[in-house]
Amino acid sequence: MDTYKRLFKYTPEKIGCAYGSIVLSAVATFLQMAPYWFFWKFLNELIVNKNPENSKHYATVIIVLMLAQGVVYFLALWASHLLGFRLESNLRKQGISHLMKASFAFFDNNPSGKIRKIIDDNAAETHMIVAHLIPDTIGAIFTPILMMIIMFFVDVKLGFLLLAITVIGGVMIAGMVGNRDFMKNYMASLEKLNAETVEYVRGMQVVKIFRGTVQSFKAFYDAIMSYSEYALNYSISCRTAYVSFQVVFNIFITFAIVIFIPSLSVAVLRGEEVSYILAKTVFFSCFAGMMFGCLMKVMYVGMYQFQALQVVDKLENLFDEMKKDGLTYGTQEKFEHCDIEFQNVSFKYDEDYVLKDVNFHLNEGKTYALVGSSGGGKSTIAKLISGFYKIEEGKILIGGKDISQYSQEALMQHVAFVFQNAKLFKKTIFENVKIGRENATYEEVMDALKEARCDDILNKFKERENTLIGSKGVHLSGGEMQRIAIARAILKDADIVILDEASAAADPENEYEIQQAFSNLMKNKTVIMIAHRLSSIRNVDEILVIDGGNVVERGTDVSLLASGGKYAQLQKLFAKANDWRIYDC
Image 1 (cartoon, rainbow, N blue to C red):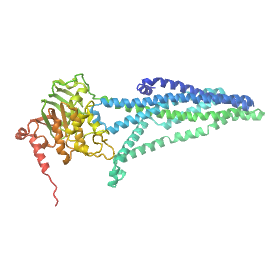
Image 2: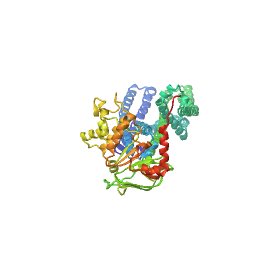
Image 3: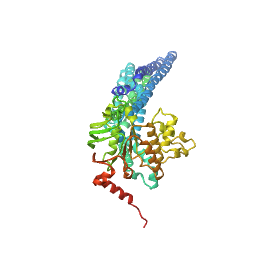
Image 4: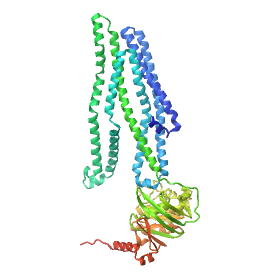
């Protein structure tokens, strides 16, 4: 019930379906068992009393009850399926809702494929747990109880026999299911195998090109071996219980015969009628066969119950992880000015600090460049300004106010971020650009495309700006995709523009066009550039050298070169890298 309580909180609007399914399933179970009582009456009239007319009456009652059971069980399934479909839908909506609020730290640690798999697969798993398990659970609870009651009314000895068989079967079922820790490890190995299989299929072209084998994908090979080991161990561990279970429930009729041998022998010797004993034996053979199916249902209920707990834990752990390090926003909608200030800012990924006690001030309307070795904290500083991460210590001020005082909409409106790898959606070029400002007019979107130097891109396609990205025959280079992303940023017209190695994907043909697009994007803006190509930042207003999570130097290109510090060393290394060539010997 704890598992169901955790699931039902996601479907409060359909909780009535849950209770309706429970009640209808209980009624359906009663209607399923009632025909067996009348079947005993039928056998008694037909075999013992030899009264076909009365037996016909009981046969009619049995048919009516079976039809009624079918209708009621259908209604129970209908109610549980309504609940199941709504739960599945709501869990996906919850996942999307949490994703929209998750910090960038969450996406850094969780690939999109993994997130989608956890949400989609586990949401789908809840359908079986709710739609089928609710009626099955009710049946598994009430069916044995009603069976015992009926059998004790028919014959006390058969009642105790059925009880003994049930207990024995239950013990065997427990031996077949395995302990909780084993099942948890088994499910984990299966999940890992599925994930590694996907990676293997994605890399199959590489495997074929280099004539590799499955051993070349060590993770996939290890996942196969791990899963096969768990599967084999599970099969061996339940072998005795499974075989014993099959034997007991295939020869259970012999137990009834053994019980009645003494009574049957006495009746034969005295020349008495044995039809009553025969009727009980026939009834037991028909009736006790239900116990096999009932115990199997109990086993599957237990298995699905375990899976249900795993599903809920995975989803709620994912939701909690999305909430972790979540950002808090204020109500301030406007920036009074665009000065940016870091006051003793510290930030870390997991346990390691990337920035420690960082202090600097950037004036609005100027262009700044962040340079330094990889891993020094340049991109982290840019993302913190954008409000992507929650800082550990200190304050970030924009316009003289703490960034946490601004609303999410204000940050999105006033800060534009152009990433190294531009992301375009499966929409038209026009729609991809209009994402920058949804209320923009057609003319404004087209002007943004023009300023981003996208005219030659549009001329490639018959549909021009209405060309669907990702459709057949549409091929864009990295530089062309970057220009469309720049058009989006131009349309947004944000006060602060952050360029994170934004020209790295450019090929030589696109380099000039992208630089022209940047010049249009950066007009009258506060610009922060992250660059490894040091030749592109010589004309910025000021350069900040980031090393070891702090600002170690700042100044113009000329002053920093003259000081002979870290920046001068980086420029020397950059010049050497540009001079490096491979010569044909």
